[in-house]
Length: 523
Image (cartoon, rainbow, N blue to C red; front, side, top):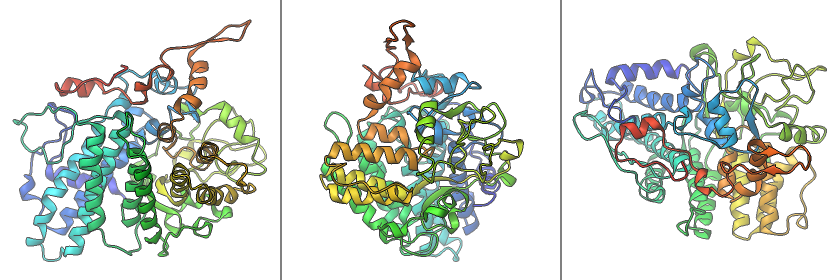
């Protein structure tokens, strides 16, 4: 998706998508009218680029700097509230709040406006793409269906992020074209968003997408739609207060993963469901450096630094001023295994050099020397490809769903595909003989394999491990340690005693703009 921001800019200028003072979730058009725009295949191409561009900026940034207000939510929402990353000595207050779970609604990362921007553009696409073939005969039904499928899937993915980060939220499914119309809307429950919007959108996307095609990993294709749908069912299974589907949802997730296994990957071969379908141990880092040539990536975000500037994501490896670092306890723990686990030295610096030992090098073509890995100014001059879904991720969730259903032999097989690829001896059935011990082993493998891939905090919530894993960590990060007894005085702003704080607060901007919104409990 080279130069996607440039292509997308043409679309934005053409239909005049900007900001709306009435409600940050709305983006009314101005300038050239929408009815005068969607007339040919180029308009569809530019429109899709605009959808992906908005999502790309929200996940990675704008290429300007490492400011959380300009993107980077991929890591902020999925990683920073977990046990793997923490604020650094160069941190901002915004990052500190994430690390300590002391979030305030003025924190820039609480703003969902970027996701609603993606949704707004997808709404336009869904409404207006069907009219294009009558103006441009080159737009075949297949082209139209594939384009609509991506718009539906991107809308669903954006709402899925909203559900996981904030819970309840307003549902907008039609373009907002008239600023004189009411701009406030009450929130829809998270379960209703899943059941009446996200799942139907993905079902529609799957019905439309052309099957058995070799995909481009930068776009949502057949396998990516299956991966998102399965992920949604994994999340739905454990919705609170008995609203989740439990075993039925885990089985639904497995069914969608089985469809994914039949779909083709970027190399033209079906993804499959054995260890042979994974990227080889020796070339594991190709998943992040060259995903178009790997058998494992399902959907990745493309960032070309020549076109878009530095991908100054929160885990950027520049010389200084990086507000996010690996949690030192995690770093020390994993570093001890570098002689066995082949991922360690390709993800982190295993030597104590230059005070940069807590940076994540996974996404960068940097190799350790005898003095470790040295950050530099030129490190910004790299393309960065962040995985949204890949086969290892799918295998570990398949193992998780199997364990939840009591199928421990299947869970063990899929867990060992990843575990042994990393260099470890296979787990035995005796080592993971219960669903609980199996889930713990899967979560540990998740932490290593998917390090920095925006998954960790969502996994802790989904598997009901937030308190078990995070309370002791937050009590230390937030608490006061008695110098004599070493007893930690608990800080009530941690997760302990406040499960509502799994969700983020609704931002001040959104509350000001939409008078029907209510703040999430606990804030």
